[in-house]
Image (tube, rainbow, N blue to C red; front, side, top):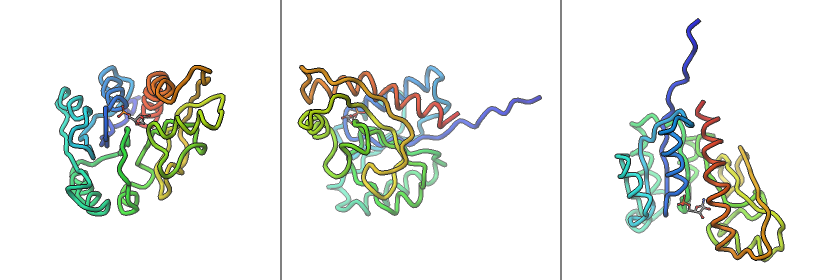
Length: 200
Ligand code: GRF
């Protein structure tokens, strides 16, 4: 009986910074853990190191910075034009700081996946990105923190949760040390595991 090998999924990855989550996806595709290929990487930041990471793997890149387009709507219109001919199955927000407009979400309903460095619904929402998240978690006296992979809906960090993982906060943790431990020990593994399942 012919086993049905699932079609390789086409991913678009949106970044704004270092791109370490994107790097984890690149590595997982190369070692066969994710049945996908990265059709394009789009950065909101023209000096994101993630652009170099993508180029190292001959992945096509685009830069769509807000200052160039003036509004989130105009920027997303450009991103949608870039994506349209690529038959994208999933759009991955990997450390992406741009606003995703409702027009974008409507075009890729339940196909936009974000990773957020806290245990949503706690410490999500407007302004909760990067170090702000970990500062708030420590200030609140939390004992555990972690990361969440979720679908993007019209809210901020409110879409259906696909996966979460957590770690204990150490008494010596600072926002920086907590951010690094979550990024290195939780985010990369959680995103790869979840995308491996989604793209199977
Ligand atoms: C990190 O703060 C991470 O927690 C969040 O985006 C930031 C940068 O990640 N998801 P990356 O190294 O650019 O993937």
